[in-house]
Picture 1 (cartoon, rainbow, N blue to C red):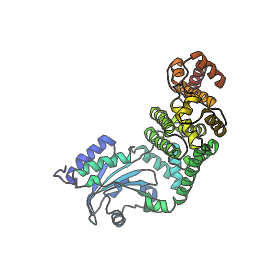
Picture 2 (cartoon, rainbow, N blue to C red):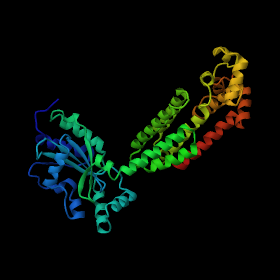
Picture 3 (tube, rainbow, N blue to C red):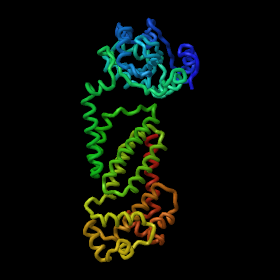
Picture 4 (cartoon, rainbow, N blue to C red):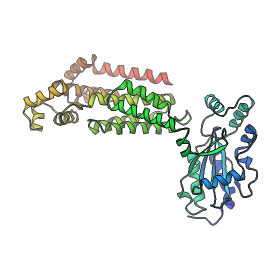
Length: 417
């Protein structure tokens, strides 16, 4: 739906809405452009003694991005502006929103920004004071709001995606993200991809130590959301969870087990609010998937034995016997038993028993079901027999294990509070 007023006429309303919703200021400029210092509250002129927003450089800017109406401009000084082009003319009217910051003003952020821009002494103090007066906002949310608002004034404005641009004060020029990637960030991108491949390769082989080492290197090259953006961090962890789960689809592991772990991990991500605990989740997620590979992958087994293993794990709550399983797969019991032991190194009966205890342990860790219910759900209908088998494998009774687990978990959570 288009309104019959122009962007200039609607600008006072837009400016009011931006301030009320995001606490950011906005300015509209027409040719010949004047008072361009408003765009960044004169911080660049103050720090550098010169100003990049000149009509000549704006002309280059329009030529570089003629098809983009919303430009998210990220400064190497650590703040953002959004430029909204209102026409395709050689000297278009445009709206500038900002400056604003997307990160908390932490000491580490300030020192890193000062170091990268060669600021010290009085210049560092000026930058610090400048940041104290600057609102914090999410550039993507702002761009979405502007797209919808201006889309009601200009045809198809809301159908044009924003473009991200970096501005480097050290070389005084505008650099597109693509150019940055191809130049100074090329080596970083190669290292990032290499560490990611190392992490995935170690994961699918179940090599936990190598995978954890590669993961630490990979994360050190990633731009992790800061403490104020726990929601972004959870979305980042969701991507990691999906990447790991997808990688395991190439392994000889039944997809149902991968789906169970992925669901468990995602539930933990969604329910975690503490930033420090979120920081520790990547390694825990990787460990879960590596253990899944170790426990569930039988790459050296024949198709028949892998099918038998899957059948056992899916039907653990039912009565399982060598004779019944052999009948299911149209094999003689003694022949199936010999093949199973040869390929897995254990008897079929011991495998069934171990699988049931593993699933019982998982239920004790993740549910509040009574022990009798858990025993029945994994095929033990005699509680006393279940307790004896559990103790023989775990070294303690089911109730002792549950107490120990929740005591350890409580200590871990208290440590992170």
